Image (tube, rainbow, N blue to C red; front, side, top):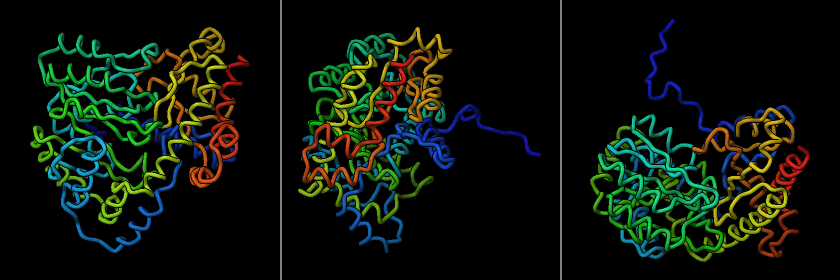
Amino acid sequence: MFEKCLNMNVAELSLSATLEINEKSNELISKGVKVYKLGLGQSPFPVPTPVVEELKRYAHVKDYLPVKGLEKLREVIASYYKKSQGLSFKPENILIGPGSKELIFIAQLVLYSELILPSPSWVSYAPQAKIAARKYTWIDTKEESEWLLLPEQLEDYCKDHTFNQKTMILNYPNNPTGKTYNEVQLKELAEVCRKYEVIVISDEIYGELDHDGNHVSIARFYPEGTIVSSGLSKWCGAGGWRLGTFAIPESLSWLADKMASVASETFTSVSAPIQYAAIRAFDFDDEIVDYLERSREVLRTLSDFIHSKLTQANITTPKADGAFYYLINFSFYKDKLKGRGIRTSRELCRRVLEDTGVAFLPGDDFGRPKDEFTARIAYVDFDGEKALEAAKKESVDEDFIRKYCSNTVVATEKICDWVLSL
């Protein structure tokens, strides 16, 4: 009856890979299939109790808040960055959005800029650039370099492409690899970015989940050109609350203003009760710090266990530094995989799901070559509330992991058994 009059920027756009695998997993579960959900990177931990109590306290608040966000919340976030990273952001340059994903998209829409993405990168950055009709370029990283962007790689690209403004999204601890950058690496990248005036969107949504609690922002070394992106979804376990933050330097204050203009015509403002509750989250008192320390301990121990098991099975990956991901490489088995008719990472993931019930994502969703046998696992299929409570009283060791993270343990062992049986 009606012609399909689609905007060509979205004509070939599919459902976000992480959300799609979650829906497929839930569909199989509803049919009685046992599925180990290592696809969607959702924090397994509960929202801290004091933050939930604040949400209840302000549940009656129904008024629209300022487009940039509740002033008190923006002041608390500016204070948080001052205390944790020594960074100075003005509250008027802090933006509160319905998830950092939305803020990153609006930034891409407002900036007339080419996008640089280290490969691998999170699944939504490139599709957002497509929607906004922006050019984007992958810079390939290597497993031998721990999937980290090297300063000389960035330098080589920038010196050969000087014709337009560039924005780079740098995410660390990284989704999908779990790797992070140390101070020396960040300083070297910052020097290149300053030399070529590259705007950096530093996606630090997993910053507080650095397994050792030692996250360092690149904004320390390139404050004038770095936007720091974060939110409540990962370290605070509140993905469904949809609250993201942007901290923008004064030199880019015009960006904060124009992003607010777009926000005023789209989402208007973030839910008022959630913004009030977020003030409590970003306060980082002893209760929140204790919650984070236990979360990190569980994730670090689980990560070590998984890395050991994968290594024993000749599935390679650099050891994670933070977050709850691994980009695992099955290339040791490439001949056997091809002998089974498996020639792409997507076919690999489909076959593993069919044979073992373990759901995870192909590397090509994250910018890797389709014929590279890489895949991302999110080691979050366990009851985080029980694990955190138990961590108050019990030693967090392999026995603990087997007891309280059993689904993820079993899933890891199933992946290893599957490749060993090829």
